[in-house]
Length: 193
Image (tube, rainbow, N blue to C red; front, side):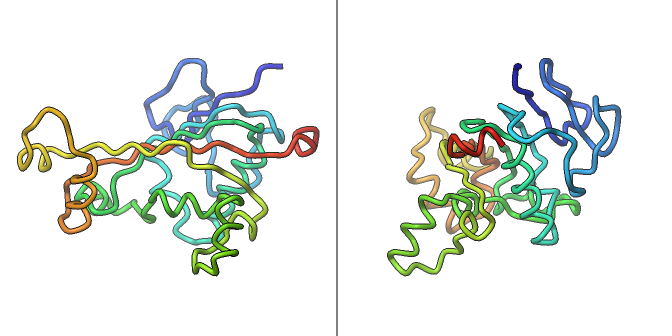
């Protein structure tokens, strides 16, 4: 059986070969992503896209955790989750009153059991959410999209990513968007559940 591909929080941007899901509009499936359980079977999904969605969900931390627990439950081992969100220090994040949660690479790495174990060994203060919630995601890609403000300051064709990150720690509106890819990590015995 082919695994499902979900476009969660699709709005009116439907993707071919995906099940397009949203609480509003005319998706393939109308669903409130903050209500659980989701209607898909355990280990039935190979890919999820959350394009400018996750920042709208999980104002309550338990709901936010529930979203990650549901994604983990429905995804197969090795499934990819593509997340695009506005950078938390860009005006696009602040301008929309429905944005309830900043999404950052480190915030997503808290769901990695591998990193959780390393942090525990080092006695770091990072919350080991992967262990606490019994879920496991590895952050495989972090892409950043420079804003027009960045290009006004630095009109060179090639973006110096290190400089962009350094300056964005001081100034707002230099990074417009994160593109993050998570991989679902499950042991083989969990796949047969």
